[in-house]
Length: 141
Image (cartoon, rainbow, N blue to C red; front, side, top):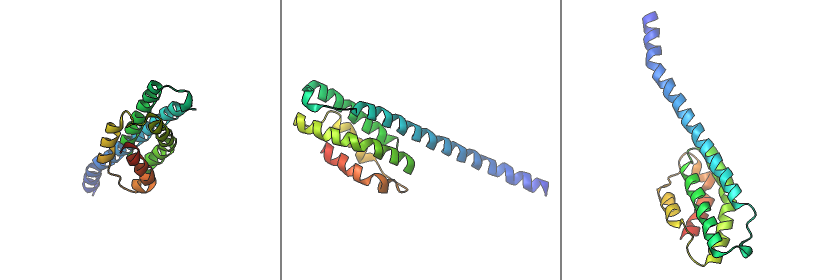
């Protein structure tokens, strides 16, 4: 009887270890998404496009597009999708104004376009960020 219990536990132990690794990975992904969200919020700040030169707008747009691309790559679950959604909303609005002011494609659009094309939302993630994804696609096309 003790042998069977020991054997059962020894077979189940690696399964519990892999659950812990999955939890750690999800936690790290959430932390990465939070970090990107904080950087993006700082980057948007109070933009006054009317008082910015074209080079300054391009530089700011490049950083914001990079934040979106990085943030999109950090989405692993519904919680990180929620963080991305909160971060991306104001950025998309700012980038729309920048694109209009520049009159051309935004710098970094190709990288974001590639990230969007390879992004495959699963497990309710699409329900959370579907509208933002559509806005991003419109922004880079």
